[in-house]
Image (cartoon, rainbow, N blue to C red; front, side, top):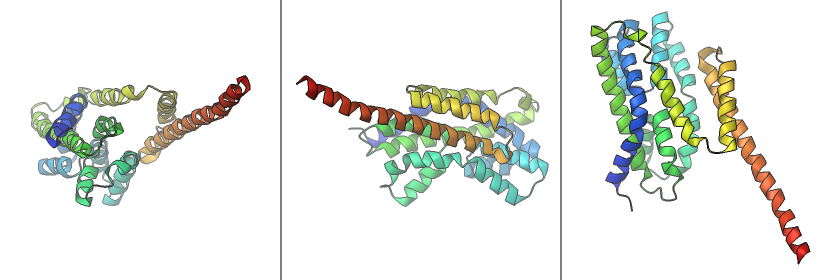
Length: 247
């Protein structure tokens, strides 16, 4: 049986490939934030207490454009609505845990951690799986803050770092998170529909295209699963009748 320590370390190890892709993203945030109007302490505090990569970049753009606090909060909420989908997938796995621990896990629920722990939670033995989750979360959280610090330092030495195209690494990371799950017709359908919708609805305000794309992909994937299940169920009686006929 796995120990807490081994689960924790395994969670950290599973997140390393995703951390590699997130490193340039974190450095880029640390570089851009002071130039967008945030002080260095505020930049570091955002990565410590907000810990939401894409939302933090959107906040920078909103601050630079001079919008009000209410708009910033609402936009950040909309952008992070995808985390409700992640939470829904995990709620049955963690509902037995104390509220304080679940709150901590909710804070650390990122795209990378969700991708890293999803396969772990498919196991039949999930008694210590939350330690795997915490290992992944701590690894990602530490990396994000340290990269923000590094970005702040490098930003002063290399003011043109934002032109280096570092943000491409995050796109590659997301592709890497999805590919291992492309093993069924439902998954392929969901990804194709979500990708198509993300292009069609790319210009929706407040990044709502992300939510529309995610929900569309999920709906199509679930529809394919239901169709496949119905086909299997309708085929079973036919097989039984044919067996009885032969007898």
